[in-house]
Length: 363
Picture 1 (cartoon, rainbow, N blue to C red):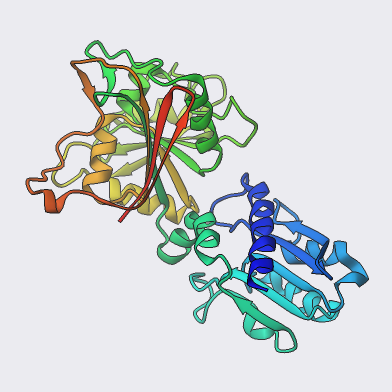
Picture 2: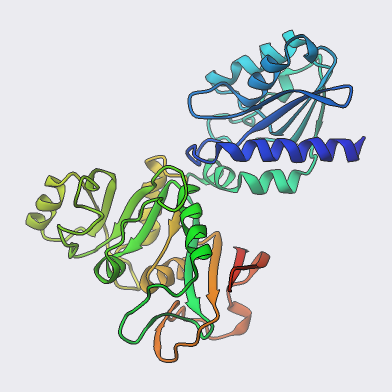
């Protein structure tokens, strides 16, 4: 039975992944209805659609009676999902198999899920739990803490440089790695860079190489040096751009940026480093419902986040190039003993075209 349960749970996980365009504060959920070893109903959570288990049971119709429902995450008990309980009971399914319980929903002090209400249905949990929790790592982090899940991504040469001594950084990585970068953008609610990146590269910070929603653009610019003609402000881009500035930044400059449609978020200065308090920025983004942030640099932003121990995932694209003197990816973290080094709870390494991708979760 366990081998069969694993098989169908993997299918539920793959279904859940189809909802990747949804905000990270909503879990990715997929569900199957299986009768006599055959899938008779499928569903996944999509924007504006029903809960995954409801969609799957509705597709199964009368075939759901006596069947088993597989879902990667326990449906929550908020109002839109109350239909899950009634629909599961009315369909007369015999069993529900769940990958991960939802204990972290802050709106539900006794846990976020519905399983305790399914008295007439056999319940089994913990099937491929690690994989199921990994799929929703952004949701679980945010729902437990109110602070976004932070992924730092950068491309570097083999000798650890993200730009040459003249600041040239396009393109260190190969085209397949650029596509990976856009995939990561699609999977996060916001993309964060410092003013140095805007001044050097004038990026759009949108999803272009694949289909998907554009994230909120967040620019750390303590002194409001951002050019009004930059691509994150011009051409109608400004309304999806938030500029994080120091509380002392020029109000006249702020007015000009706001006239374009961007929002200015004023924050206190960092205590031990230059720039704004980056932990306060993440807290504020969390209050606004931003549950995941992709950080694309530059060196100062990456260093500040690592120093604050605010990074959950690190994705490094390592290109087979040697630059020599240039800009390093990470600055001084004031680590003087190896025992204090930042380490990882899990690491995956793979080839992507000519590049090597390091993908690690920090402890």
